Structure formats: structure tokens, C-alpha cells
Image (cartoon, rainbow, N blue to C red):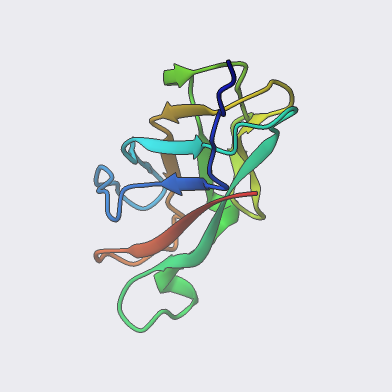
Length: 145
């Protein structure tokens, strides 16, 4: 008797398309959770490792995006927090830190077979004292490889 275990080559990520943070005065902090981010690895191989990175691909801006209307990644802290759902661990959250450059959100450094993990990261924006009032919009990008 024989049988075959079949697998796909799928390694993907899902993340919310939008989120809102709290309001903040100049010199204050805007905070909030982004919503559930999930990495799903269905490659079912030996040593299935991956790293999920996060970046601020578009700075937060309002109005015309002048210097007083822009908040850079250096002012934005990403905190992944713990896993909220996990299949076939281990998975490791990255450390909290600014989005001045891309950083690790979550990773898998060892293990075999299909796996997945979800988390609900927190974003904290330190609003510069020189920032003008307005609705600020930016783009947070998660990717996995």
C-alpha cells in the first residue's frame, strides 16, 4: 500500500487594506492596531523558513505633502505583538522598532511542513510638534519570502 502527500508552492500573506489610528495633537502620539496579518505557508517541505518584513512604503502625509505635512518612518513604531493564531510552530515575532527602514515583523527559522501564523500589530506615530493639522494617510506594506 502506498499513498502520496501533495503540497502546493504557496507562501503568502494577507493584511488589512485599511486601518485607523487615534487622533493626536502636535507633539503627541497616534496609536492603534492595524488588524490581523497572516502568513500562510503551504509548501510542506523540510526546513520551511521564511521572514515577513514590514515597511512604511509611503510616508504619512496630509495636504500638499510639504515637510510640515509629512511624517516619516522614523516617527512610526511597529510592534508585532504575540501570535494570535498559530499552526505548526515555531514562529517568532520581530522586535518593536521604527519604520525608518524595513524590519522583521514575524519569522520562522526552523520547522517542517505547512504552517501559518497570525498577529495584530500596533502602530504608534510620534507626531512632530511642527506637524500641521489634517488627516494623514500612509501605506504600510507587509511582504514574506
